[in-house]
Image (cartoon, each protein chain N blue to C red):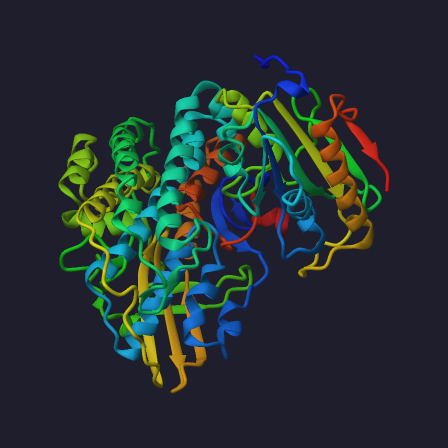
Length: 172
Length: 435
């Protein structure tokens, strides 16, 4: 069922998707990461923001054979902790509320894309542990540091043949 | 006496946060409540003091699924206050924008949210394993509806191109015509969906509803019309509040609506269909008749078929508008504010959405009232649950619970136009036990 894994250098096009709500403080971390990456010259790579709709993820990554998703997480870990999952080989933690309304979460979107034979060859998910999800546009200090760190990790991942180890937590 | 409690902690595939509670005492339904604990959102409050021109953008934020409905009711209300009439291609573009929302919303509800109930799946993800085509259709229809909304509205969620008097910018013909092939595909899927949904198994559950929707002399209602019911109501929007009353009930943060002196009523696709079958396009009527769907349908479970019929209509209407589209010379009609009260009501995918605004001479909003469709349906949903459970007490808790969830989803409830889940609890017991 799984598509064969490719060496990094053989990916044709990478799509980096930042997910979050820009009016919910640290929830904007994923959006901030792609904002920063949009200023970096990365070959065969596009960056997109997705503020709301998990159902649109499949549309968003259309045309990409490697997808990197960045989102804020709330797992109880120390704020600013960075998680990295290979969504093809690792089991992603389920959304805390799986029954989200008219939409779906990242694990469900990936599962659905596999069922519909539309899953990219590689899907990597970065999670940044948030601290404050109140209304507002300011981001916590530790999360700001993590944003910079994830940006660098993604650049490294895209330019280095050896990706960071999967399923690893990087503490703040 | 035996006491039974049925509980579903996270009922999926509805929009909003609430719970449902059914209490059965001595073998009869003693209470059925749709409890909405989604915090009040105070939109009516914070519209006060804002400019009339901000109403469409502020109210669009009430819902990510039906922002166009909020924008349309807001602009019509303001235009009625200022005595402005928007006609011609601008009016057509508004209908087209609304078609986009119907296609997106109905497509998703039929195939993604409601179909799993009828086919016996926990959710669309489980259903996709055996019926990937159904889920593909849902996603494609959603995309087509969203594209239409993005072309006319500027973006698909919370469009930003709608203004009182028209639009900030109108699309060129070349922007719209590429949508025709997608819409023709969508229509074919919709026609097939009418046939397919009609083949599903429906509980025998005919209800004696008072249906309420807009009614227009020549159109299936989207943007305009008088408020009509199957029991004789036929009033202008300005008279709406003489007949339809809101009240606060303790178990819901959304106000309940009822018809003065009568009680619950039903808004949404089933109401529109029953009151406006004659205004459907020939192909939509044909699809309904081929599926043996009567012109008068009072089984709420069959709303899935009616949504498919409305999907055919929305595709037909969108194709018609695009084929005859000529960009209007001006993107909007100029508007001069004056002190007045304005009324607007349009047909959101889930039913009648009423707005009233009082504005001052400078166009500042002094008062706002918004009555969304799901708020109006709350009493009817509770009545459905009461009647449904009452006639099926012999069913197992598991099956009864499942069917109750399905009965709620008949309304595609947008409980808050905001959040996440609904908690369903059926409690069985006796008066002796509860003392």
